[in-house]
Amino acid sequence: MSLIDKITEASTATATAAGLTVIAAAADEETYDVVADIGDTWRITLNARTGAYKINVLSTQFGLQSQSGVAVRTVSGNLVTYTANAPEKFVLVIDTRTKSITGNVTLGGRAATVAGTNYAASDLSKLAGIYSYFGSQRDAVDGSNGEFLAGQLRIAANGATATICDGGTIDTSDNCTRVGTRELSKETVTLTKNPATALIDVKINGTNFGILNVKAGNRGPVLLIDRFGFNNSGAGAVRRVGNIYAVKPIRLTGTELDGNYTCSFSGADVTTSTAAGINVTYTDFEPRQVSREVLNYNQLATTGQILNFDGVVTTGVPGESIAEKVNLLPLSSTLFAVESDLSTGLCRRSN
Image 1: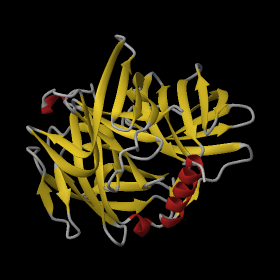
Image 2: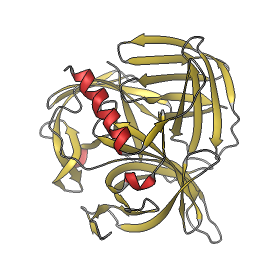
Image 3: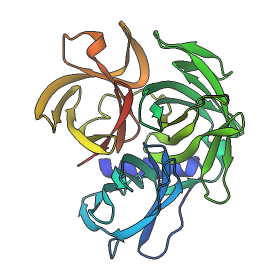
Image 4: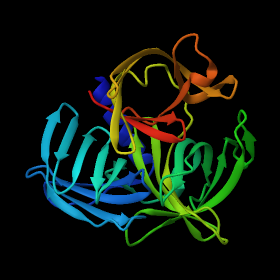
């Protein structure tokens, strides 16, 4: 069996185990629910025959409106790319093996990096378990006060709640343990299927925390969370927006990042990644710069120390300080998340 077949088989098995069903669409069309890193959730429908598209805004923090048009469709193996320049500008790449979509979209003048799925969750209890996550959030009004998020969360056995340990790990009793020197915080959120959108509303103390989508990764379910809400309920509350990407902390074998990827931050492609085993080359677009680094699988770089941590990868130039290393979170064969200062990037497979 080929690698491609194994990925398809594993993703399909994930969808079955997690109770995911393909989002209904008309003939020749596919529909994807996507998380935009500006704090929005959109439903994108693409017509494989005509290239026609519609971006239906389901939730927006910026008053964005739904748009439609025609894109150019190209196919390269398991990857299908849709490119449009008007009325909206985007490059969207579909991996047919995992029924997932990633790319960059400019909608209503707002540029965003997006990730999404052709699946909808039907039984939240089937998502139960512990997940490691990367994410980021910032002030909606001007993008200031950026904050990188990392930790673990646990979805309860009934699928109705999740406990989030930011800055630490979580056990099956919802106890949080601090990792490194990050500040540790603990929150409990509710998860409720929205009958109007078929998405999962996430709330904290009855107020908005975000919207959850679920991707069928080849190593288990991937949680894609559109993060939005106020930082407190009192006077001077500030609306915060962002994104969270989560996957179960399964030990990596050391080849998960093999291949070619394009990495995006805030709606723009910024670098490429080409890896084989522990060796990786990054090529930045502007300014043009090449960096050859080493990947350390199942390790996490924190302030002043490297920790053993299943499911996480560090990247860095040999001999450099720990502070210069960057953490990566492989989400599936299609996608990995990147820690970068006070933001989170996404790298999508390009071969």
